[in-house]
Image (cartoon, rainbow, N blue to C red; front, side, top):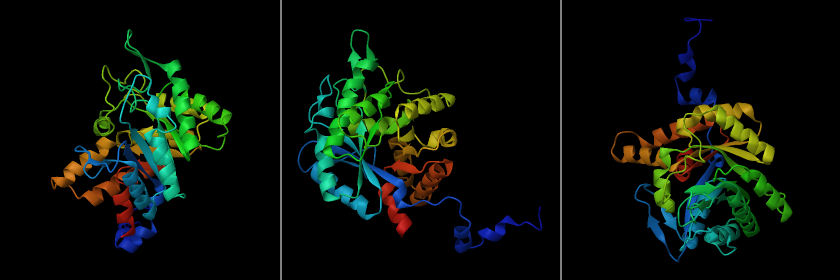
Length: 326
């Protein structure tokens, strides 16, 4: 049927009508909130490039996690900022490492809140790369790194992590984590794999927040080329074969086409990471009065869910949850 019989404006006239026919609904339970956990006591250090986001010592991270839980947010994603870094990334898999300690504290304070732990070495290595480095060749060594990534995942599971999330992009790391977790009695711990993680310019503020910029070169040798979409499907299929329980696309907004293609290729839950640069550019535009922050954020997050992501990792999660409830 065509105009004038069909008038699509009929169901747009009022808020109640628009709500009745709305195809995509956001809820606080869709969100996972990233938290940067710093070593030390009573640390609440602002991150200049991410207004409203802080490096938090464990006591403040626990408070932030409680607030997230009270807002109905499903979980928090923990990134560690150790007091010391070394070549072997020993802080990543130390049972008393900052993420492991924070995991225990948050699970004690908010048992029903999901704690997701980032499995990567970049925050803990003195060189800032996501795996072990052959300095003579100036290359990241894939297979050598798998053992340390697996040790990191099992240490986090032992501390009580509900989900481990490998973000390193080493080949074979999902299989290595699954084997190590199963061997140590953590068969029930899910893996949320950063399956399609691109070598993106939108990670800049995160690298300031986590003090994880590479000391030489870049990460294009192991993270994906932004020009490739079919490769994302191959990466995702491999992660699923190796035992991933949830797959992820990162970043989100420049890669909504990839989110859609991954959603159509698998029945597994799909996550998308609304990364630091995406957060910061909206914050900066809002602070300059160039756009309405609430409307822009909610439009962006709705777009991510509409593309096919059931799980949205976002620094906007607390604000968005408050707006959804208001």
